[in-house]
Length: 111
Length: 114
Image 1 (cartoon, one colour):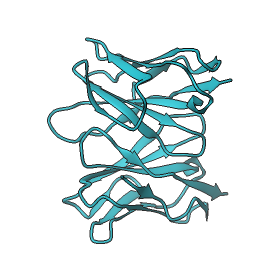
Image 2: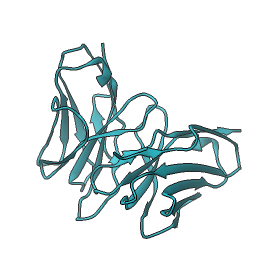
Image 3: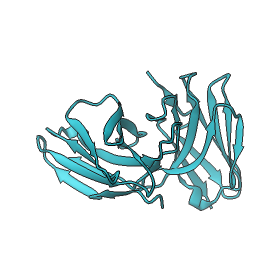
Image 4: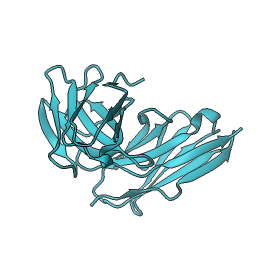
């Protein structure tokens, strides 16, 4: 079956530092990946996505890196702010309809 | 905000009862997916509806069923509720134009089964 996992369940960073959240996936056929942010009591919020024909994509303060060789995905957040505190999920799909989510990494930003 | 709405926000049921959860998709989206998120876990795919037909199903028993209406709104029905059905139920809408598209989530319905 599908397996999407995260290396660290929790991460604490100082405000202003950069954050890196990692994710491993097991299905080499996966071709689309999304990072979601979920705040307490809310649904997952889209942050950034990447397709398998790319290895890097940048957004506003966020960068996603994809290493298909080792089936690894990372999310980099620049100049982390208190509002970035949340649980971050990576999700992947190879079917176009069913997304597989990891268990999440809880990011805490220390003021 | 994604424009995806869900109702109710919270619900308490007892074991054996039936429940219906509702979702209104983002304007212009034709596909809706439902996920179950247990406490401390990532969302688990239940099923997806496209053009009012089921378009993929995860590892959930038949007592989990759904509907999609012509206006693309959707319902999730769960029969014979079990204690383990207590979770946050999320719907996500997307626009299927022949490829893989981003799914945008609603705020969820928190179901507690006693």
